Amino acid sequence: MLISGPTGVGKSFIACALGNAAARAGYTVLYMRAPRLFETLQQSRGDGSHLKALARLSRVQLLIIDDFLLTQLSDSERRDLLEVIEDRYQAGATIIASQCPIKDWHPNIGDPTLADAICDRLLHNAYKIEMRGDSMRTRRPGTKAERKEVIESD
Image (cartoon, rainbow, N blue to C red; front, side, top):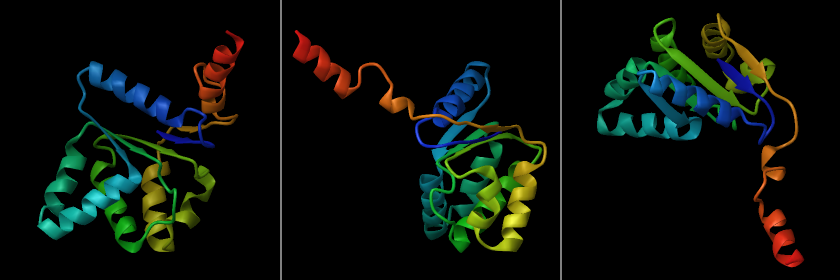
């Protein structure tokens, strides 16, 4: 499942709600923000556990990657992403949440050859949700502005 939309519309909320439902149904679930995922994989190269880290990501039944493509991917991030996606392709469920519109993923991944391989695997058979709207954070009850109004009206 690929979820895209502007900041604050609820992409992470939906991804986590689906992850929570999967976990309650007995599936193994792992949530990671993309920057942390790539940092973890980079560190695993240094300590010699890179293949173990990739294997762990391939075994989880539902992998949720949040904040995908906040920045253009580096060469090592592209290669790691291809390995993760390839290992999971038709073997495990993956949810990716991104502010970057899905139509812009290919150019933002970077290298055209790797972007082709990654997008082909991600977009094939994927459910796509493109969200629109204003940030929920500005409308959420209990925001500082609302609490201030309540305090001042007392």
